[in-house]
Amino acid sequence: MRPMKTHFPELLDAIPHGIALLDRKLCIVDINRSLEGMIGYNKDEVNGVYGDFILRTNLGNNDQVCRKVLEDGQSVSREGNILSRGRKKTPIQFTVSRLHDDKDNPTGILIVLEDISALQAKGAEFQRDDQEFGVLGHSQQMEKVFELMSVLARTDASVLITGETGTGKDKIAEQLHKSSQRGRKPFIKVNCGALPAALLESELFGHVKGAFTGAVNNNIGMFRLADKGTIFLTEIGDLSLPLQVKLLSVLDDQAFYPVGGSKKIEVDVRIIAATHRSLRQEVEQGRFREDLFYRLNVLHLHIPPLRERDGDIRLLLDHFLRLFIAKLSREITGFTRKTIDKLNRYHYPGNVRELRNIVEYAVTICQEEKIGTKDLPQYLIKPTKSPQATPANIVSSSLSPLSPPAPPEQPAEAGTGGWAEVEKGKIMDALLKAGGNRSQAADLLGWGRTTLWRKIKKYRLT
Amino acid sequence: MKIMITTRGDFVSPRFDMSSEVIIATCYDQQLLEEPHSLILSNVSAESICDLVLKENISVVVCGGIEEQHYQFLTWKKIMVFDAVIGPHAEVLKLVLDNSLKPGSILSGVTSREESS
Image 1 (cartoon, rainbow over the protein chains, first blue to last red):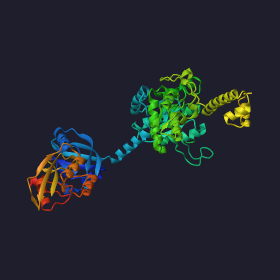
Image 2 (tube, each protein chain N blue to C red; image 1 turned 90 degrees about the vertical axis):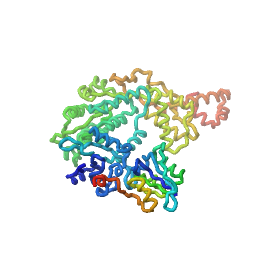
Image 3 (tube, rainbow over the protein chains, first blue to last red; image 1 turned 135 degrees about the vertical axis):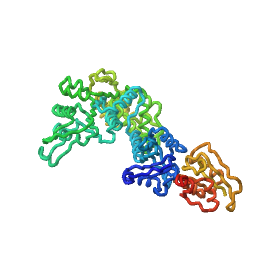
């Protein structure tokens, strides 16, 4: 066979991946410098040696892949690894293609070996991130959300995420960004409710030096920081009307003028917005522009509240328990049956965030092997009425009017109220037993007379 | 002294962890005591070959590419390892008996140059 010759060694060496050229007998004709580094042989040593002896891939015995490519001409891309002369295993993305001469006769094989060890390490990091920060749920409601998320991640349209406070809107936005094509580009989060309107404008769109008092430097703004990536506008319902106009123009033209600037800046940004308010209701009340609402609401993702997610409470309890046991180095084996029942019955107005805080509190407080009801925050001992009962708080999966979420429980007050009731009862019992004699009643309670007198006065028992 | 060579066909297999066949030879004073016999392995993994090496009381292992951890394990078990060897296993065995094999050797019979010449 007439051996192939490479007339472009410099070109091969300039390619940042390993390249191997094999003849029709699958013996090495040429390798580039990157591949020399990967396998630990130089090209003079390996010239003419059967390729698989040198590359040591795991692409099947007897070079099945290369033989098949040589036979049918269909390029193959596959993940695998190689073992170097220095005993190092490197994960590789192989691309095997057939080479032809002028008359289209196969002359050999080209193998491109891309080192993917950095990518795999990044992947493992993402998995760790997912375990720690990802969105968990196996309820039917969440399965639907996950299904929708995978569809939304493939598109580039604006997404509006709604849901009560603590349902994980931020995390879902981040996941959407990570799994989208923009995943490697920046993800910029802006809380529209956190800054006054004037500051927010400069924060979002940037300003030029001297635009206003104190603008001593140019500021490129969040939109330009997020160029080619995603900008996440959380609490979009709190955005002021003038800024809504400017945001609408950015959405339409993908361009804007920085504060005080005269040069139009073009950006390529995907917008994900989130709010716990009902934007439709805000539109009706004239606090939110209708055109911006329709522009943002291209794709809508509603996160159900925790109390509507069947079976997820237990899953999340176990997840956060494991997390905090590891974090706080505690030796706790689980929850008692009574605690589980109590936690399952609770309605979680603060959703997953509240559940996480309850578990953190319990793990910190618990001194025994299992978390009991006494280790739970006081406000859980006397659960208040579920907001499910109030129609204003029902959140539908469509964009039906979303009521503002129920104000968080007043734990401190509820806790005091609960204890006050108990204490009042104890005082009444003692007084009854003592036949109204306060000294005897104080003895029965183990208090001094003045303490009892003070408490009677406090609870107006006289 | 027992010698094990991981093989593929007539050659030393390119990878230790992907070898499905080994040849075991027993020698004394640079002479083979019996005809080398080959074993087909039911499990293809570096761990199962390491187990076999210990079970068969092998003193010398000849192989192609091997991962550092398996190489270190075998040498820690006082087994001599000649790795990154490329060539026909019959030739390799002769060199082991002559004490002239070196790790990383590329023997004749593995290049197309020799065929065309």
